[in-house]
Length: 191
Image (cartoon, rainbow, N blue to C red; front, side, top):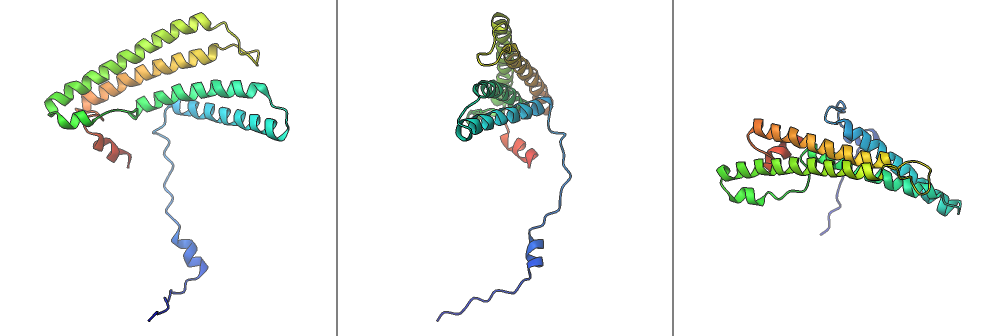
């Protein structure tokens, strides 16, 4: 025997209020300088890509410079985004080893990873500085602008990654553990 399902009647106003949530105040304190520059470069890139699409497929006459500028904006987004990831310890990492070894072994391993990260980014910044000095006089292909802002942005991003790595190292020393040793503690902090 099938019995009809009876739904309680609700007015539209009650349904609309059921989806309301209390608005929380906006907190922008977790964002740093590189976040805002990356956001600006991202939107510049998005506008260039839209212009490229619009002029190519709608106007049937593409603007060649939009592709080159979008690529250079993407370079900035990638490297400054990497600095953001260093600051919040969100680069890809393998932490399974730290679960298998005792804390007395995990702690020095984590500190060694921090030191290697600092050295790597400092060395990459030094290499980028040398590279930028060699090619900084080059011009872009489609626009008569120099390429040096692109190269020095990558250099600045590596310097920022090195400095953020030092900050993370100091924070890990003060805290007594890193994201490698206790990833669950960092997940709870974000929630």
